[in-house]
Length: 132
Image 1 (tube, rainbow, N blue to C red):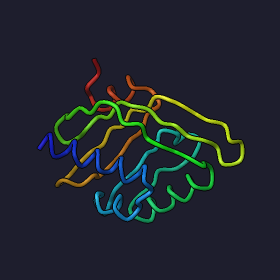
Image 2: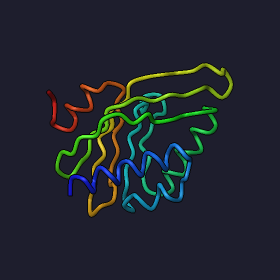
Image 3: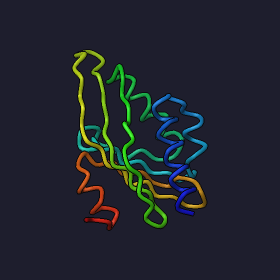
């Protein structure tokens, strides 16, 4: 299952970066839950397909560009850890933001049930119980 889970995670990140919302939704379970890396700023957790659409809408309002920069992927049972980065360019400010990004991508039945984002790789590893 490990390689398949990593492939699903890679497909989801690719769909996210291409803003292919409908493909992204097909890769998620109906009860999907998304805790973005900037949840303290955005102030909410996004749930289900409506939440996915709302999150993409908020990104397009705030950012001219917002990309997940995939790095390494690690299978940890029913989850995949991605350690990479993100790059964004503000809609109004035109300021570029580059940051590390760790994602814990939980899967159930070859679909993603939950994504938790962290701006610190070590924090993502701890959250997945895979601290080094």
